[in-house]
Picture 1 (cartoon, rainbow, N blue to C red):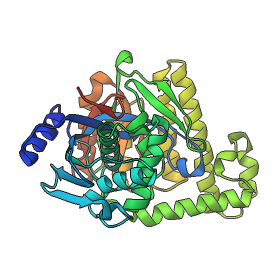
Picture 2 (cartoon, rainbow, N blue to C red):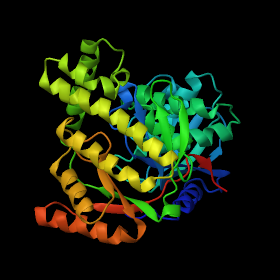
Picture 3 (tube, rainbow, N blue to C red):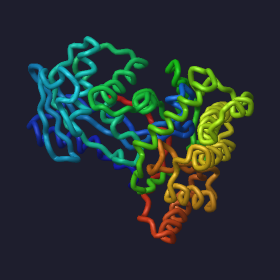
Picture 4 (cartoon, rainbow, N blue to C red):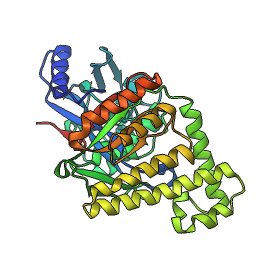
Length: 389
């Protein structure tokens, strides 16, 4: 992972011109995201706190006649064309094009007259690192099509539509957090999202003003059994909620946790429930500290979140744990795995002037363990989907 390139928008525009022979009428961008805290709380109707990354997917686009859509991807170097029949039902367009077609399908399903369009896509959101490159693509395409068609769709409704494209057309069971972050985040803020009612609050998270940054570390760990294990964790949480007689684990307060755990017979279920209940509380505690402008004080909560994911939810892997331990030893204020687990990324809250030293310490620790070198990038909270000037 490299620092975000400054020319991704220019690459999208140049790709459009090379592919279609004319200038695009506009460029629309949507970011990747990282979850500051709140892991596996989303499907338990709890709380999450993502922020947008400076890495973006950019779509350069223009209208074309008829119900046809042509999309070119810088990454694959190929262009695909699909028509109304291809977006009549899910699954007819596959591969990366499914994310584009899925947005067209979801808009049409919602009753919007989607204009035909030509699109060129460039991105510096890393693929496969758990930074939600798919939501960035969907959200950038959605922003372009809404503007090109002069379609009215309230911002609070856009994440659910983009999520529907991924869940139903593509067939990937993501929660609402990724699209909410890609569309609704603001620069200098984290997005406090209630996954039950989808309400959001923009929480000040101005790292630059405090001389801080977040170091994102791509573990480069292969995702080991991630799909099956994710489903197993979800089943455990649902079983715990059912045994406790609540709609979701979000309904168990941390002050009720000991009594709730005593009612569960299975030790594994107890661990899973304990993670979710304490993680929800850590999100609330982090939000309270950020509201009070005590950014440095959230570090121990980040680290406690990682310990809970490692010991109670059991979703970390050696590369991830090594990155967290090395970052903390090098002076990070807090560090944790972010994302679904079994690979992906670690984030570390650091003094901005320590970025190179912490990154070097993690790289050295990887070398000592014989792991492939990690990727690193220093990031600040960035804006959500927007049309570029």
